[in-house]
Amino acid sequence: MADNTDVTKLSHELTYQRYLFNREHIKDFFMKMSIPEYIALHYIVSEEEASDIYSGRTYLKDLSVKLQMTMRQTSRIIEKLRDMGYVLWSHDGNGSEGTYVTITDSGRKLLKEQENLLKQYYGKVFEKFGKENLIQLLQLMKQLETVMSSEMEKLEVDKNETRENE
Image (cartoon, rainbow, N blue to C red; front, side, top):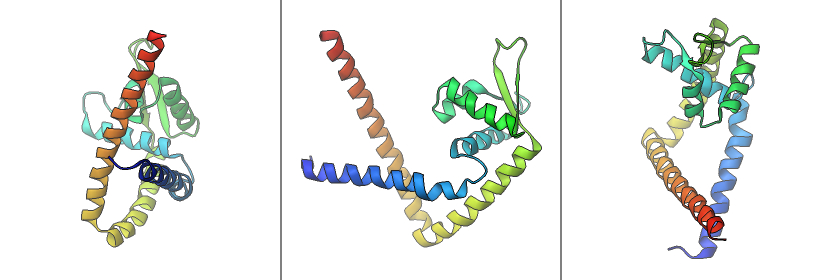
C-alpha cells in the first residue's frame, strides 16, 4: 500500500483536477443548457432511436437511473427543459403508470448544436491526446469509479454497523 503522504497528495490532486475540469473547462461548452440537461436530452434521443416499443417515450424513472439522481432532481431538470420548450412531459393513464418525456424539434436542434460544439472540441483533443490514450484513460476512469464506489459502500456499511452497535 502507498504511504499516507502519497495517498494524501494523489487524492487531493485527483479531486482538484476533477473539480477544475468540471468547473472551469467543460462548462464553457454548455452555454444554453447544463451538463445534466444535455445528458438527459441525449439519453431521451438515444432511447427513442433504440426502442420502437415506447414510441419515443423516455420514462422519468429510467432517466433518473441514468442520471443517478433522485426523481425529484430529475423532475426539476425535466421541468426546466419543458419550460424552455425542449421536451414534452406527459403521463400514461392517470399518471400512476408513469410519466414520460419526448423531445421536441427545438430540443433536437439544441442537442445537435451542443453535440457539434463538443465534437469540434473533443476532435482536437483526440488528435493531440490520441484515440488509444483516451480509450485507455476512460477504461481506467471506469475502473477507478468502480473501486471508489465499492469503498464508499463499505464506508456506509461500516458507519451503519457502528450506529447499530452504539
